[in-house]
Image (cartoon, rainbow, N blue to C red; front, side, top):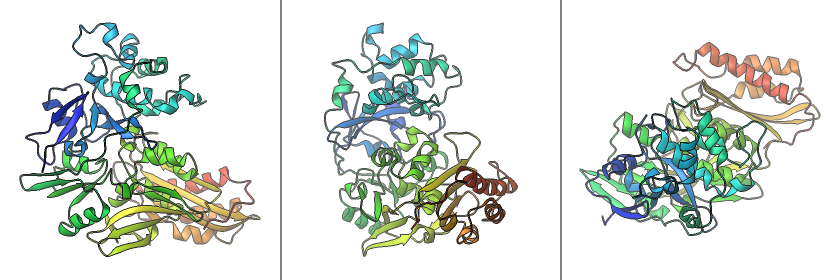
Length: 488
């Protein structure tokens, strides 16, 4: 219950008179740093974006953009945050030389009109400006990466209703490399602040940051209904919009025992508290299914906080990770006071937001068996191409030898109370010839998988049609495949 402090724009500030549920954004604004705004309160608009110093995995730091409206301020005890006010030279007459390069380009190229979203855009753009890999990133044919290596997907979670985005893109593509003496660039060479052993109590509620897995499990044993958070990308929405008020929040985002990524001969194991952005960088395309998933999973701001453990722990039927991991044949490593156990993801979900995870247990890791199927695909059907909730998600991994389907796994999301395997479709394919006739028959079966409902995202009829079309699309993309590796 000691002193809680956050370093903001180079100055240490004590967190006082804050409740367990006070988020970082509300605290910053109470401190007079009103550049960051609340737009949606659910991580979709990016008006609240700030920079946080996170470990880069090599002893240095990486400036990472996050939505300040979602995580509790207590989760930033001992951490470093930079807001839009901290990017330029404060206290001057606001002349050009006082502006950060990102701010200057946004101003000169008309990237701001009403200005409400601008500080969030500037922070998200600054994170990409300082991304070490940007200097060597190739320009892509799809037009999402500029000649300076700037990846526009870094801004996919930022919403602007005034500029039409072209001036913002122009500002992004005009940025050069950080100049010598840039303090934020130089800060990357130093380690990120270590996590603190934070304990906070307020009005009968508690916030805890355990230092070890054993301590985490002890806390869960004492309070089985405690809410475990990493990036708070789901819990933050529950707190903001549904006014959920759990008695205890436990932060695990910096718990090292949940943050490993190892590649063994027969599997890849991914720590449950690694963010999706960290997993994406570490795997570097090694798992094609996940490489397809990541750009379609919310926005960069969300992926910088969201984790596989959180996405699977919520047991949402429309979580994007579950269908892909089902098709990959993933297992979950669950840890509790009585030890660890491994359970197939296909057996994990038992009902709407219900799982086989026992009270007091935590998802410690996700384990993907090797070798992978040579051909796989992830299809997300949504109203928007990026940064949207899926109406239907389909993941397919197949093994074909000499024109015969030897093994296939199909994961589905958005068509039932839980993510599920398309078992009937799989059975219809295994052992048959890989031909248009066979696939059309199986596609008709796939249209009947699950129990799709009518809602504001799609009708049940549309969802069924998308299931059928997904398998036909997969066949069209792999029609000439005759010799695929055997999927486990």
